[in-house]
Length: 252
Image 1 (spheres, rainbow, N blue to C red):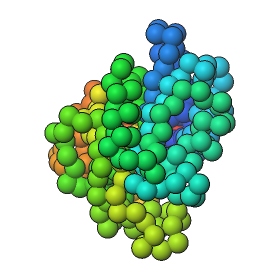
Image 2 (cartoon, rainbow, N blue to C red):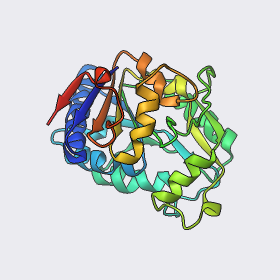
Image 3 (tube, helix red, strand yellow):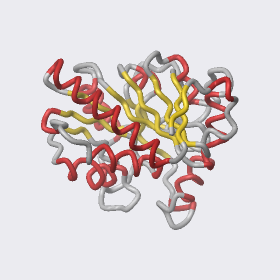
């Protein structure tokens, strides 16, 4: 794992998008297709905007999987992550190959269908964020580091649900779903490269918990410390509580 800190979330997003684009181009050059995992949430806005504007990506040869979706969530709802990905990635680049998690379908059927697809070939690069409670995808603490399933139904804890409210996705806490479909930790860790994009001061405590200490299910994203090709992209605000000895690179 490598940690990179940038002066602003804009420069963070641009650097992460530039590297992501190079990884996608390289995978297409080597194998004729790039298989990616896309994250959602407010932390990914600038990154996805920069990525979709990156030149010379053969998006017709990109196959996308997605991290999580609320159980029971229709794509017509503003908080739908399927809707998010259509608006911020799929439609912008005319992506043809993608596997969304339908929150209105039977969860077991969705898990079976998408699990079969993701296991067909390696994932070249996964994009991820870190929740305010340290979650990775919707694996809230204490996260399951052991399951061999690719996706599962998870219960969302109070801190996670409060974050979704605070980001403006829902009018009240009561409106935030209590369950979600989530990619598992083990499945995400199978990606050849992981780019974890985490700007903003509200993530500083989570970053400290996940990357300032030991690996623990109580700090789910800490598992990324064990991935040989994970890069954590931080800005000055999100890295503020991280010991400087943990920071391997600084960029402007």
